[in-house]
Image 1: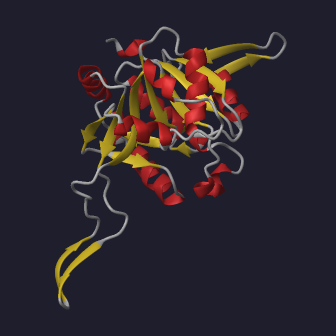
Image 2: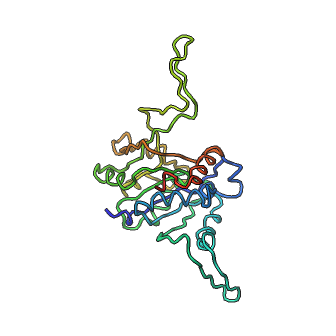
Image 3: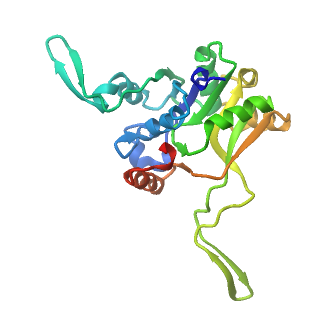
Length: 263
């Protein structure tokens, strides 16, 4: 299946309360890491695998996201504006992307499942499968391979499973003696939701538009109990921007000139 035919629904409507210093005036996906908002990096993560159809599920401060994409070339390139005619001329476009971006308002306080249900019922079109992710998570996972895995297993859903390092060091002791010291041990054998999903369109039958519907609770819990949710295991880079510390770390990777999700 051609990845260009798979729409990618990105959750962009949350309040981002754990990074309040950055999200008081803009939604978290629009918080910059380097020159671009983290949302741009999320979309590039998909684009490097050929995905080009994006549906942004908007809520909190939706106008900020709409303004960014409505004036995308103005934000990302040198331009000349003829004030009399309001004509915009782009000079030496530094960012020239073949993306189709749908800006879908899904409610100010709606939960994740509600947002996906609303947007997918409007904008899925004839696609049999679709992707879902968050507007604040990055990875170097092979999303092409995850899609192939999803199609081969023929389940309703597939989730990227990741094993991130612990935020705190671990000390293994015997009595009063330190046997092993690990600054940031990997949680080996433990998998968490990495946030890059693929679903068959029939999953929508299980996903109500009710504003309180949380994707990660009843819909995915029931999908797993019914044996319809597979995992695609990934042990490479994965990171999310929950805190200012997370943002600083992602920014350092961007400033290194070779962030892993864009390799």
